[in-house]
Image (cartoon, rainbow, N blue to C red):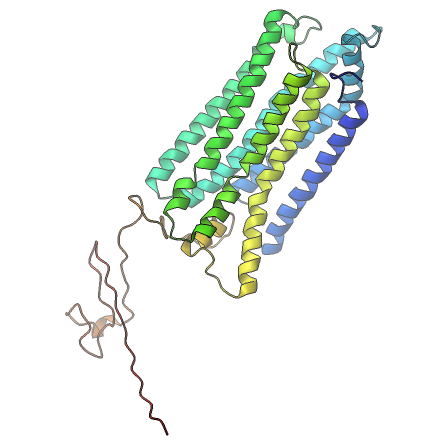
Length: 368
C-alpha cells in the first residue's frame, strides 16, 4: 500500500459507520436528558440537532460513493487501467463531492453557533460582553462565507468543477490547496474566539479558583476540534504534499472532524447535568453561587434568569443592591434606621449605597 491510499474502502466504511453510531448515541443521550428533566428545546439544541443532521447527510453521501472514490482514485494513481464508464463516474463523483465540502463547513459552524447562542443568554445585559459577542458573531459569519467562496474559486471556472479532468491545472491545484489552508485557518481562529469569549465573564464572577478552572475547562472544549482540524491538515501535507487533496482522504477526515465537532457541542449539556446531579446529591443548591444557577438556566432551564450581571464584579456589573423591606407600609418609620420594634428592621439603601445590618443575639446560661 502506498502512502497515498491509506484510506481504503473498508477503513472509510468502518469509520463512517462508527462515527454515525457514536454521534447518534450522544445526540439521543443529550435530548433524552432534556426530556427526562422536562426542559423545552432551546436555540442551541436546535442548532446542534441541525449540525448532527448535516453530518449524517454528509457521512451518508461519502459512504454512498465510497466504491467510486476508491476506483477512480486507483485509476488516477495508475494502479488500475481506464474503464469504459470512468467519465460518467467522475462527473457523478464531482457532483457529490462539491456539496459535501460545503456541508462540512456548515456543520462545523452550526456547532460554533450553538455555543454562541448559549453564551448570549449568560451575557445578556452585560454591555461589554455583548459587544464582544457581536464581534465574534460577525467575524465568524464573514469567515464562513470566505470559506465557501474559496471552494467555488478553487477551479478556474464553475463549469470546470463538474467536468472531469478540467480542474487539474497547476493553477487549480494551488487554488485547492489555498482553499484548504484558508478554511483550516478560519476554522481554528473562530474556535479560539468562541473559547475566549466567556473568559472575561468567568474572570469577574465571585467564585473560587477551582470553580473558575472547571468553567474554563468546559468552555475550552473547542481545543479538541482544533486538534482534529490540525491533524487533518498535517495528514494532507504528509500524504499529498504537492497535489490536490485525495478524495478518499477528504471523505475520511471530513467525517472524523465533523463528528468530533458535533460530540463536543453536546458535552456542555452533560457537564451541566452532572453538576446539577452532584449538587442535589450533596443536598445544597449553591454550586457556583448566583452564576451557577444562571449557568444552568442559561443552558436550557425554563426558570427565570438572575438579574443581568448578578454575581459579577467590574464596570459592567451593577454597583448597588436595593433592599426590600419585610415590614408593612403602615408601620414604616420615617427614620432610616431601626429605632422601634414596630419599624422595618432593614435600612433602606439609597441609590449607589449598600447598608449592612448586623443582628446580635445574646444568651446566658448558668452552671449548675
